[in-house]
Image (cartoon, rainbow, N blue to C red; front, side, top):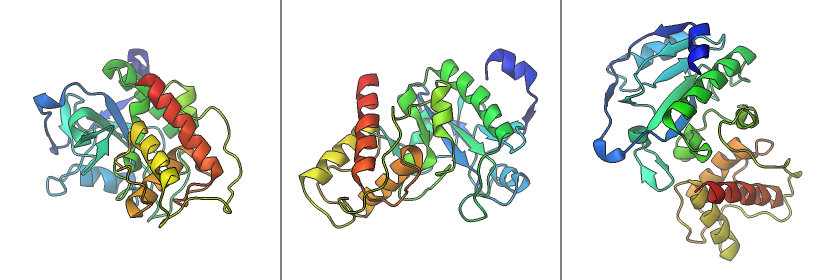
Length: 256
């Protein structure tokens, strides 16, 4: 939030014990990671993030009604990312801020994110991006940094709205309809696969450009689609997904 927005919104302090110091070698905070809680209620999620035995937390949590809970100071390392990689660096907890959005997730009745929640997120994320000097290409989903393990915040999250507010990036044009007759998919190999792997890696995904469309590549493509190509999340690269990969790659290169 801007400092003015902080004054306008009530922030509920709910300190979590699940944090430690950021490693000095990690450098400054430069990444913002968005999650959903994936639990049946806000109360359940907050209880888990406050339970020392769970060993999970985030810096912030936002309720569906726009309530802001502050769990871990931004200067500390919260435990929200787990095994993760972005732009060639692993252990994303070391250099990131994590925001949890209350939502039951894919396992408990996934649903759109309400207006009040999105409004609160826009205020909070805008302030974090300014305060920490976060590059637009470093505003990411949990699924972007851990594509083989996570789906959140998922294909119902309005990334375009964030980008319009100056938070993150978004392709310049609408995706074309899916064309399943000319797509790359699991089991394919060759130069075309390698080209897309190289572009996805340049965007930030933890992927090896070996020309082999294996399970990890499919997971990365699904993560990319959940963020940038939400109309079709199938882990295959049709002409439309290829075009969007190209657009986001160009944005990432321009901002590198």
